[in-house]
Length: 195
Image (cartoon, rainbow, N blue to C red; front, side, top):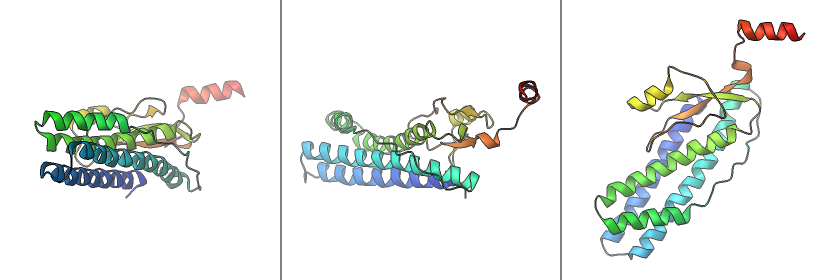
């Protein structure tokens, strides 16, 4: 299993654990064991903690990808997660007050926020890694039609290009290093002319 595939397993596990924790709190709320205010704070905190962990995972697994490709120990960038507590508590409040499909919506919120934070973490870390020149899409185990289209048969995107995603997507950027980019006739001619 490659580093990016292991990263996908880690993010899927984090998302599933976060979902379960959120649904446990929601069950306590619907059973009348905790107040709406407590449920909002606890659920918002669970998701915020998970997104912070996901950003850190993205940074660390980017380092693992570089080490796997180069065989050289590499430092992580140290991407700092943002505190999204207020936004998440507001989202949870909206779900709990509307009540329609609340369990499903909270489950989706927990999963999506975790996965998106991991994608953001690895993309942000890529910007500071000199060896990384670009990325290609590593699809998840069951890619949808949109993810398959975004894959574009393995197209290599510049590292600055935003990673395309949708809610609940566990596709991840698989990095391409400067050493892996093959020269073309045009680039070889440019080098000869410069010499």
